[in-house]
Length: 223
Image: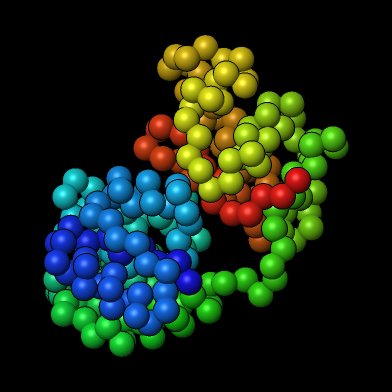
């Protein structure tokens, strides 16, 4: 299981990363929202262990954003122990809420159970059939693509799990590098998300937007 620990206290972050690695997880440590985005763009996470009192973007904001862009589990580990804080975290979408200090054995058990619940039984993957201009969901549903959508999905297929800069999309789509093209690209991705969801409500296009810099396809995409 792939776990990312988001903790700005370097000593505690090292303890969590080392401890969870001992339990057999593939663990990486980051310190804020932007480094979390970079880590997810490099390799998707099954579970994010998240502090709330972070520099810059607050942990609650990160939970809210993750729930819109990722299927990963979220386990909060924070010093905020008031009932209002716990309820707020859970309402925003946290799967579990720990108040520091946390026992690593209990944290590992929660991560294991959460991962087993979130991991799909099927090993099916997304398939891009370029010759037919089709994207097939893991459930086997075919989604017809427009010419520009084919260009976008082709870039994702060639760069699985990697953040692709917007300028690369502009080059392939023959867009100018300006604000209007940013809006056009966002609209194109949004329509593709909607099209996939409309064709297969059980599947969500695993495309992650990284702070207006680019996009990454965070799942296996075959051709």
